[in-house]
Length: 451
Image (tube, rainbow, N blue to C red; front, top):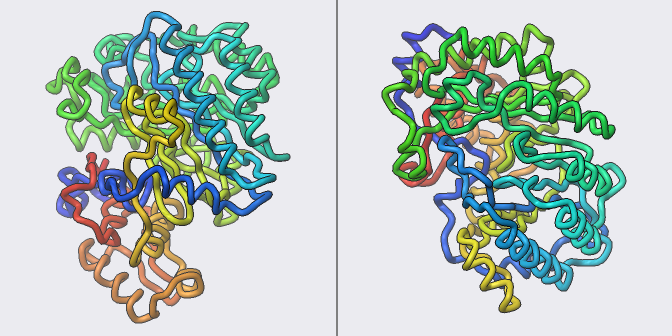
């Protein structure tokens, strides 16, 4: 890793840049894309192709203070039951427009807390999905599981439905940090959830852990990562906590004076990173780690790693359909986002319409720049021959873009006949390098800290 003084001089500790899980980023979406566009894009999916489906469940029994996701608290099942009925109606609308023979390559239930659905609701929702678009032969069905909100009956229902990958949010195992971020989840209850999952033959496990939380130190990060490693996850996402209390009001409960400095955040990340590498995990992009046998590692080795709203993925489908309030879909034509508010989403679906409220139709150099940014975020390199083969750009223009980016980083990047390469010592700057290829107004890009 490059010395801190040079990283500081290049702006790493001050820069606010997008996470680039899409291009353009969601703040650039507009209401120029609506329900008719979404319906037309669904109808344009090639028959007998594979697509991905994301189902958003925006409910939690308790609202964690650190979380900036679109969620709402509920202590009863009534709103959840009503919401599942809305999802079923939305799926029926999809069925009316979806070409024949389409199958799922990936299905993911996220939130919120999908596991607060009772077993019957889980079975009902899964059946409704598979009646519209069944799982393909090598499909992956993953669910975000809250260890505090799971039991044998619900895991039985998920296993029966075909879940073959589980995702568990951990954040940090330190009790003081958990209290400060409003997320009490001890190691023992997490270990029990993992054992219950694997007892049902579900061996693929994702885990999320955060750095940059209040009161985090190298010693505490080391202890949390070692506990996480004892669970033997296949994939780990090491995300930086984004403190945005002006956007996520619940974060106002977290004391900002207890947060680590940007320099300390880098130390925390590097502490965790070294532990994963020492345990023989492969480094995937800027913030993921995976076992050598995992699909992410195979995709990386094959040059097929992708990036979407859920982070890094080995999914090769060209279409991602988002179902539920605020869910975002991606098509070859552009992005479409459902109405964020549950009430607005439900109202549109009950009226027999898709709830698409905003999005973005690709234009100009969008697809080219999206690929340049994705290549940097996934592989730390841009392959010139690939770009010239697949996109309408001259070699001289591409080289000009490379050199312009390199000038911003004191010549740290490597430019060869093959393309542009970010060497290991410069990789903390990856999102800043990607920003050089972003053609949109960065003041609207929904920035977060570069580290």
